[in-house]
Length: 199
Image 1 (spheres, rainbow, N blue to C red):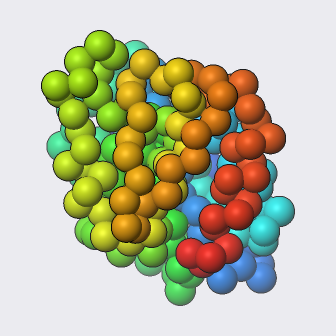
Image 2 (image 1 turned 135 degrees about the vertical axis):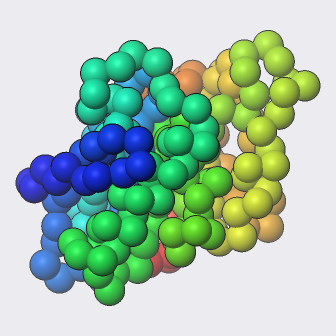
């Protein structure tokens, strides 16, 4: 694994890169607001991607690299993410078909920036459709803005809501909550079934 520190407009981000020499595609994933790239669902999905000969990059946002506990505002997250993807596409991921995604907050960032980074698909782990108990504060427009194939893997009892399926959007419901820890096998199978068709 290579660890790359990447300059962004909001400080250093860090990419944990596991290249595959024969890969035609890459999966780049971001972490949730309060967690890091060692979250069990991110690790599980990275393992699936590697088993499919897909290059994997797990990206730490600058606020996380700097040791801050609270996430940066959405515009800063998006700008840092785009900067990281531009750097990777110019070098380590040059010429590869790109799928972006992440868990929770990282999934939102990937949706908002999918067009800007030229993603061929978006993988959302536990997309936070609304704050807990606030379905009136829906973030569905972030999902609806994505025009490429999108997979959402969501816990059935996630307090952040259950996103609806749509023309380009598949939703896999697993037992469990926002952590996606209750059905690791189901999570891996959902990604294994979807990812090759996008790449």
